[in-house]
Length: 122
Ligand SMILES: [Zn+2]
Image 1: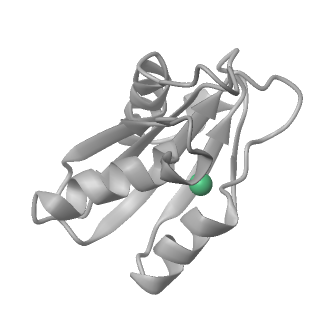
Image 2 (image 1 turned 180 degrees about the vertical axis):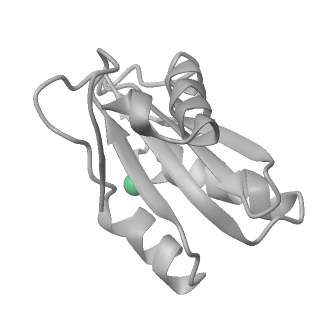
């Protein structure tokens, strides 16, 4: 199914899987990577970064968004999110959805099994 996606989206999916490798998740062992495509084609990636004080950690989605905004990018076209989950798509948490909503970003969220065979949108 991924072969039918535009090349830039396929690339975005690949980059989120690469970003996942940098996840700092010593507590949950749940790696997540996200890649965000800006309106003008630049990509920002992020991973989950955990902390012993749980609420100080950051999800991969917000990591990518905050990196982009901190570099002056505020308009986005798509985001890819990947994890090690095999049996279903990964959905963003409430905090990430709030950030996405509040910034009124026109973003397509795509999720992928780790075997590269499926994508989806929410
Ligand atoms: Zn989140």
